[in-house]
Each structure stands twice: as structure tokens, then as C-alpha cells.
Image (cartoon, rainbow, N blue to C red; front, side):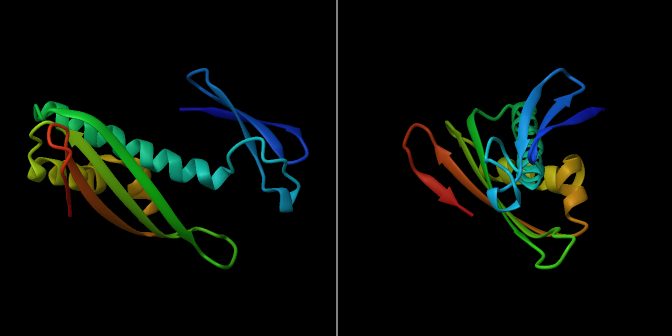
Length: 146
């Protein structure tokens, strides 16, 4: 895996991935940025949420669960002093399907957290990671929170 970061101007950078994608990364205005793109630590949190969402969907599909949507909302707290690492991350998984087995959804989340998601496993070295699961039945619209 590779990436390349090139300074553009001010506190803006262009990130290029080894798979050929690019995005603008920028600093906060109070640090000279112009709010042209996400902050680096926002991308770290977003990457972790995407990594675990990918795992959960893949695990549920392999288990032949009728998943139709998966949203992971991530909130993080950071240390007050430099380096401002994440100290706490709450991941709320909202998984929607028709007749999903809640135990299978919880199992998929646990497997991602404990075995498969490289990003959250790395972040767990400095942050307490809490997972919350909401299962929504598409047919009835009812949500079971756990």
C-alpha cells in the first residue's frame, strides 16, 4: 500500500492513493487552513469507520443475512496534550435488513473489532473503543438498540 501527499498551498495538501484516487486535505482555519477538505485526523476516524463497516457487511453477506444498509457513525475524543491521539471512540452501527438475526449482526461487529479491522485494532492501542448496535427491520421500520 502506498500514498503520496503533496503540499498545495497554505495548509492544503493533495493526497493520492496507490489505487489512483485523490482528495484535498486541509487544516483548520485557526491553523492556516481554508476548510477545503477534511482534516487528517478526520480521515483517520473515517478510515476506521469504513474499515469496520466493510467487515460487517462482508461478514453478514457470508452469513447469508439479508442486509440492505449499514451506517457507522463514529465519534472520537482526543488527548488534550500533544500528540493528540484518540483516547475514546464510539462506533454506532445501524444495520438494516429484512429479518436480520441480531446475534449475527452483533457477531459481525465483534469479529470486526477483535479480528479483522486493522484500523480499529491499531487505534485500540491508544483509545477505548465502544461499539453500539442498532438493528432496523426494513419491513416494519422497527429498530432494536443494543
